[in-house]
Image 1 (tube, helix red, strand yellow):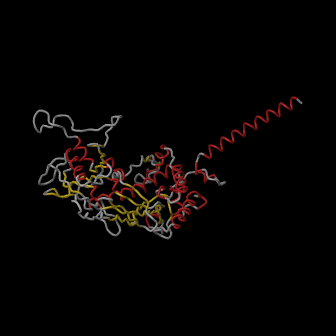
Image 2 (cartoon, helix red, strand yellow):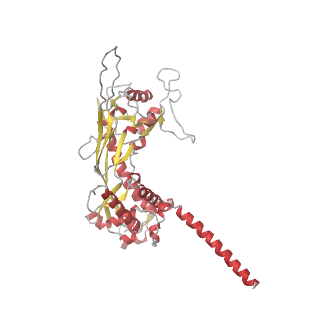
Image 3 (cartoon, rainbow, N blue to C red):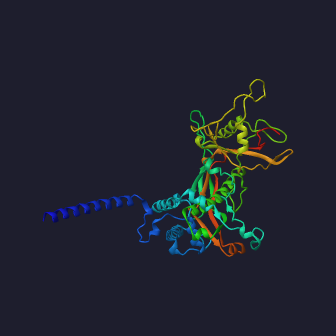
Amino acid sequence: MSEVATLLKSLGDEVKTLKTEIGDLKKKASGQGSIVRRINDPLTSRGYSFCKAIGLACGILQPSEAKVEDDMHQRLQKSMKSIGIESASPNSFKLPFASEFMGDDSMSREIRDLVIAGQTYDPDELKYLKKSIYKDMSWNIDTTGGTLVPAPQQGELIEVLRNKTAVIEAGARTIPMPPQGSISLPKQTSASTATWIGESTTIPTSTPGTGDLLLRAKKLAGFVTIPNELFRYSSPAADAMVREDLARVLQIAMDLAALTSVGSAVSPKGITNYTINNYTARKTSTNGDAFAPDDFFGMMGKVASVNGIVNDSSFAFILRPELYFNVVGKRADAVSAGDAQGSFIQWSFNPNGEIEYRFCGKKIVPSNQIAADQTKGSSTGTLTQVIAGDFSQWIIAMAAALEIDQNRYSDTAFTKDQTQVRAILQTDMGPRHQESFVKCGSLSATGLPL
């Protein structure tokens, strides 16, 4: 009897231990948020894959092979339709783009959790995907010795060099595009007045002026060609390649429009094409002006003189990298006037000894999105400009979802087993206050007068 009692006690202790462990697992699972989905199929517990979503939209994958992505599309479709947002194309497929702009907070959190979970990938795997071993079809002719030549190893993918986006980094604000595809932001354009008056004198009336910033949805489209193998053998690393490329082409196009687009019925107007402040560099010349360190302060003063700075911390300068480094690399005079042999005028470094892109206490965004295409005198199409301002006053409205369509049957795509993907984002942008921005043009990129 004592042996049976001991055995029963041992079993009871084991059961208690198992209950405790199960309880701990339940607590951990509940802390994982919405990405732990209560469906039997284990595929639905993984993160969101942009690659699988595009493959599903293209018909390469079946809904059963991309349940997470199909469910997200259906929910986005239903959510956007319920608030009146129509698709750019009847067959378009919905991908999450800006979860914070979703109307449903719980859905917004779930989308964010799923996308973050899907972004976890092994950097070594990404490097491997950018490499491949293949047999050279011939060294002249296979049948006459080409087969004896070892197959070459293809090196790491050399990615295209892209311009650095600038406007959002400088501090521009993003807001959701409403269902009706337009938004009007009211603003006060002038103030009421106060007047000194004498005894028994009627007080003059004054009315503050009002206006608005009207933003209407415009279609920003991107076009990429993707090998079908990425859909068939999708991995988090392959997904990262597709997602990053698609996002970058849209970001760069949106950024360039924000800076210099002339604006039309189908495209936004950029900062430089509004009636903003104009500043002339202090060192002028017939064929091109020279931008110097003191001109940073001059541009700030120009905006401040019209009360254009609303948020001091959001004031920033955007200029070409070559011009920026030439300006901050200037040296003070040492022995004689103009010898430029003294100390450097201003360099900013972080605690790690790395260059900080700041000048006169404000953020600097070096970017080749600022073109060198202006003309003065004999300098034709080689001069550049500096754009500055309080970028919290630049508003970008965009839709929460990205719409994609596909084409697998063009001659090139079909013969190479590829899929051409078109992505459309509804967006528009504009300034709350034009007075918050200033430009300085006709500048030599070397920082020296021409």
